Amino acid sequence: MSLPQQVRLVEVGPRDGLQNEKQPIGVADKVRLVDELSAAGLRYIEVGSFVSPKWVPQMAGSREVFAQIQRLPGVTYAALTPNLKGFEAALEAGVKEVAVFAAASEAFSQKNINCSIADSLQRFLPLMEAASQHGVRVRGYVSCVLGCPYEGEVSAERVAWVAKELYAMGCYEISLGDTIGVGTAGKTRQMFDVVGRDIPRDKLAGHFHDTYGQALANIYASLLEGIGVFDSSVAGLGGCPYAKGATGNVATEDVLYLLNGLGIGTGIDLDQLIAAGQRICTVLGKENGSRVARALLQVATG
Image (tube, rainbow, N blue to C red; front, side, top):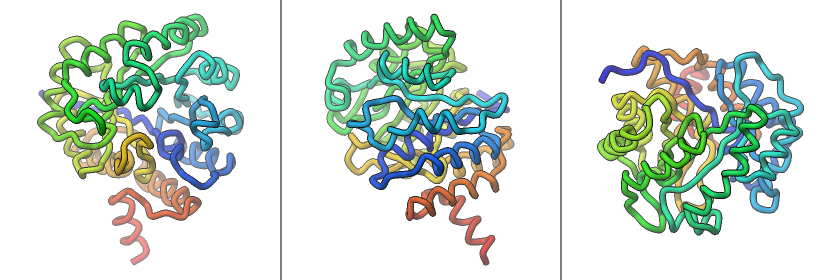
């Protein structure tokens, strides 16, 4: 299969990247990050989530962030909404697209949201109905598609079943997430082969963590399977609070460098992206998680 000519990157840094940071991050810094990401050419940004502040304190200011960002034409500013209450809050904030998440692992589902996979899917039905009524698009996430911290191996058939349920429910796109980053290129291709029998490949996306340093290899393997949408996080921010030792999402800068090298278009400016990532890392007082950013920043400073 030939590689896609265009790839859409879904920037999850402002939500998935920041939600596990221990120190408080001001609304102004979050707004600046979102605005800089859209100015760099990203056309899909997950800005925040509407969840209980008790569970995810860092996302408490999502309403304010949505109120203050500069909404550029042609850019999707999305939010994660785990339930109807979260969806209603997102609707009030003017959100036009939301995301829901389920797991491909029963143990992970129980540990993460205290219910079975089947029950978690049932909980989405009122949300999906409300979204349909209000003309809001819904994107679906499936976590632990290539391994679970509690169960170990996860079968591609199980992933396909969960993805198919979300797709049938009305999710226009399903993002398959290697939450703990244990996947390899061969297993990635096999998973997309199995899931792709039930769902068109242009409705699938990849979401890879870089715990074992395999994220870019897995993205290339996904490209070979005809996948043209990938989630990534500026400066490699983020991780999974339920997966001990799991490092952050693959860095958007690193994915962009790979795609640029393959001649695949994204419409994103690498230099602007690096500047945005470095600025938020300075705010957080942490090292930039993007190898490409670190290398190019070093070259720039001599």
